[in-house]
Image (cartoon, rainbow, N blue to C red; front, side, top):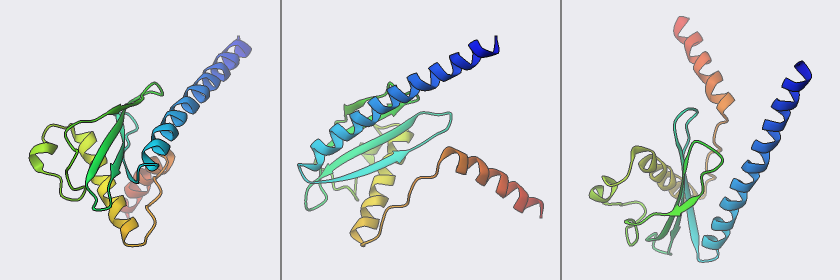
Length: 148
């Protein structure tokens, strides 16, 4: 009984790993394709329970958006799709009326892409995203600080 349970868990882990590798391959394919055309800014909106969004934004030398790809979903089955409506906009000055057509997760990912672009343009390095475990530990740390 326990052996069967362990085998099931191991099988599920293996399947998730293979599917996750497929998702990374999909990311690398589009990133390389867009990178060959010029600069690419990447924006993320991560969630533990809610949907996550990754934006790949191809920009020209004047930071005008040429093309946008978006991956959104909760599972490893999410793949990149074209996003229309942002072409021609300046990355740092996107019209608010255009933003109204997108969900809050996509808007947050766009804000992150803008932040990453600013940091890189200033000669810095974009901040590394926190792992889910770091986010959970940070919650517990805040609770301890409040108690003190």
